[in-house]
Length: 280
Ligand SMILES: C[S@@+](CC[C@H](N)C(=O)[O-])C[C@H]1O[C@@H](n2cnc3c(N)ncnc32)[C@H](O)[C@@H]1O
Image 1 (tube, protein in one colour):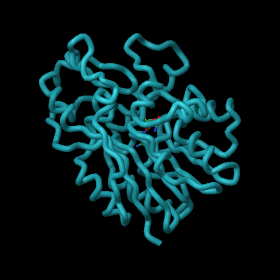
Image 2 (image 1 turned 90 degrees about the vertical axis):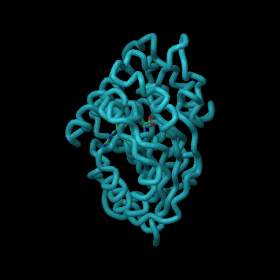
Image 3 (image 1 turned 60 degrees about the vertical axis):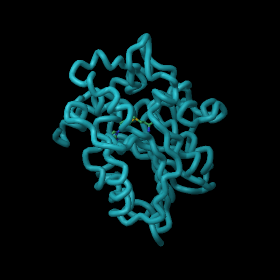
Image 4 (image 1 turned 180 degrees about the vertical axis):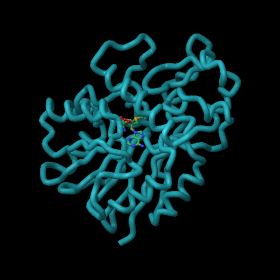
């Protein structure tokens, strides 16, 4: 798939997700709290952030392992409604600052609205692409990201940009979906599975190699879990195999072109949380 097409598909889908946050929910919607707890957020953390920021779109809890300190500058790649930004904002305090970047205008509107209504003064949301970060060189202490880099068709560039904007000694703490083995062509070309953080995922070894290629050191996989369907005991619903895509339960039998690849998808994907350091 061409880079331009991938971005358009992702932007369109997440634009709809952001808009549906303020409208009614379909019957297939999974409970966002249930998803977020399954991937590692505590009830206390979820109660401390605006409700509308939690859409169950993540695949880990990167702020939990980012060792954030008061006064630090934090950058969230693909901030969505701002869930991780609002958690980070509480950790860095008013002397610190959190910047959330997202390329979907409706997500940025939602995130800014969440910040304003809940008086978060140390969080700023910027419209932009993570492949061309609207952030100065050597200006950030910690980069976090949750279930976003798999959606980028230019992952090496994302890690190069992350390296550029981090201060020497700065840290990376990202949760993402990776592959344990290659996916068939039919799955890789499926738009629903692309936006659903499956089809664009990279092989785990290659993903870690890209982080290293950018110059990062001390690269560590600190957590790994299977897909959120397993964490939610949701591999099946009424006997049919399902996937959770953009917070919706999708019956795989309905995705005609890939229904024979169900087992392969479930066996191939893993969500990992990785930390790394930009050397001084
Ligand atoms: C799966 S959602 C995760 C949102 C948020 N991190 C969370 O956990 O709630 C992916 C987000 O990344 C954004 N995104 C995807 N590709 C991007 C890119 N290349 N540049 C900037 N944002 C991107 C989407 O607009 C969407 O808001």
